[in-house]
Structure formats: C-alpha cells, structure tokens
Image (cartoon, rainbow over all chains, first blue to last red):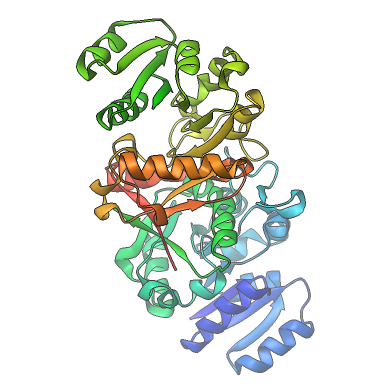
Length: 220
Length: 220
C-alpha cells in the first residue's frame, strides 16, 4: 500500500520504517522536498522509501499518518489541499503539548477540554476519515508493542468512521503486532479530547519510572 | 483515629463506613448539622459514626478526607476555618468535572491545565498537608481494590509533604487493602493537574466497558 507519513521526526521515521519493513511504500513528508535528515532516511530504507513536502506525502498516500509536533500540526494541515485527502483514512498521532511552562507539559491553549487536535484535523479535512490513536505510547512501542509485557496492554482509538477504525485496527495488528482485542474503541473523534488529555499524566509516569517503555492496561 | 469526611454523598459514605469498620471514629460532614441522609448513615454505622457541618468534621478529624463534588468543593473549603486544619493531612478525592456539556465531562472552567482542585485546596488551607489520591477509581474500588484483578492495579498520589504521603499510603494499605508497591507517587501537589485530567478518559473507558469496576495498571 502507498502510505504518506506527515512528519519526519523520530515518531514519523519509526512509523515509516516499520511500514516499509512490512512491504509498504512510504513517502516521508516534511517542510522541504528533501533535507539531510530525510535524505539519510531514504538511503537507509531502500527503494520503497520516498521523501517529499507535506503536500506531496498527503497526495501520495492512500492512507496517511500525521506525526507532527502538536504546536505545528494545524498549520501544516491548513497548508494541504483538502481534496487530496478526500476519502483517505488519516491516523492522527499528534499531541497538543506545551512544554514551554515546565513539567508536566500543559495542553496547548485552545486545544483542551472543548476540542482537540483530532477534531481539528477532521474539521480541516472534512472528506477524510480521521482516526486518533497511538498518541498515548512511546514511538518505540507504537511499532513494537510486544516490547512491553509481551504486548499485553491497551491502545485506544476513536473516530467518526467505523470502516476507517476497522482498517486502522487491522493495520496496527498486521504491521505492528497490536493484539486486536486489546485495541479499545472509545467512540467518535470527540473522544480525542480525553485521549489527548491523558498525555501529561503519561509524562508523570515516565518521570516516575524513568523509562518511556510502559503502557496502560485496563484491568477489570 | 478521629477522621473527618467532608461530603456525605456515595463517595464520602463509602470512605467513612470503611474507616469505621476498621475501628476509626468518623464524622461525616455536610451542609447541615444533620439531615435525613446523614441520620440514616449514623444509625447504620454505630457508635463511632458521627455527623456534623463541614466545619465540625474539619475540626473533629485528626485527618480529613475531602469527598465533595468538584463544582462545590472550593466554596466548602473557603467556608472552613483554615486554623482548624493546621498540620492535618487532607486526602483530596475531588474531581473538577463539568457534566453540563454532555459526555465525556469537561474539566470545570479555570481548573484544568495550569491549576487543579488539589492545588487550590492546598492553597486555601496552607497549613494543611494535602494528598491527592483515590480520584481515579470508582468509590467501590477505593475501599475494596481487591474487587478488581485481585487488587493488582495502580493508584496514584501526589502532594508536597513526604510524611503526609507516607501516612496516606499506610492508611490506604491498612484500611482499604491497597498494596503499597502499587501506589505510585507522582510528585508535588502540582501533579494533581495531570491526575485530575485523566478522569474524562476514565469516563470513556467506563462507557466502553459498561462498568465502573476497572482500573489502570501500568505495565513495563
């Protein structure tokens, strides 16, 4: 499958490399058509690794990942041609974190409580099918859940389109090894508010354990 | 020990009854010196069960629980004589939830992100030692953690006073059965922001499971 990954930081690269390993062709999108970092990534990941501007990656992928820093995410999304994302599933991993006021981070002004990045991405690209997920785990765990507790922990997702959520569940299971029955559907994209809001708490746990390799397991 | 519980709803009553069962004397505080609900509670809980106004319970207890609705909590705390809480450990269970705008609840205006109920209670009663905890589990689980997964799940606490946190850990272990090594200290009372912020997420999980009898277990 042709997949576009918007964001060439550690998260975007981890996602993109894992997808290439599974046989997908991936375009890593960044601000510039190419740069030192994406050049290196392409070189290391072989023939199915492509690079381009954010808009190029959005046009290229049949399915998209959004792995941008929260503070830049909506500017990048506004810069896309919404028609290029029509009908496409978008996996939104962004977190609206503001680290400028110390630890734990706050939620970026205007992006907590009554809205969320997930909802805003969906609103800016109304023809797409946004699924919020993966934002509650470290990037190493996103693509290799078995690294913690044998993979026995939960990932949460939400979105307005049931088919897109099914597609993303299958993608997470087939490519990254998430156990399908441990993926918890929390409803419409509005639930992104609550899913994004737990990330400052995640940061406190990280600080307490002194390791990002942990996750939440719901026991009942 | 003499304990004051501020709040006579299901949470306050569950805490108070469990403490009486363990041999403590408990005054349940409410708006009125007595009412039908607290009369009944006193009748059902024997000689060590007392009732009074919020201020009476605050004066009575050597240690206090605050189990008020988030929307009323700070008004009640402002109504106390701060001198009566001097040096006392206060276990704050409150959640700043606003259910008026639909589900999941939002965080009450002005009580998210850059402050929290925990911090506000500490600021209003500066001589006391506030420990935020228990607010992330259902009231039945608060006093009986073994009801879920044999008690193998986590509870979080924070506060500025290390001795008070030790005291609360011991109290939770000795009276309610929380396993000490599953109690995670997340730092100063400022961490109440993040701990309170996960409750809308808790509500989504509750909705998904259709049961409040669950908890988070950190796996690593």
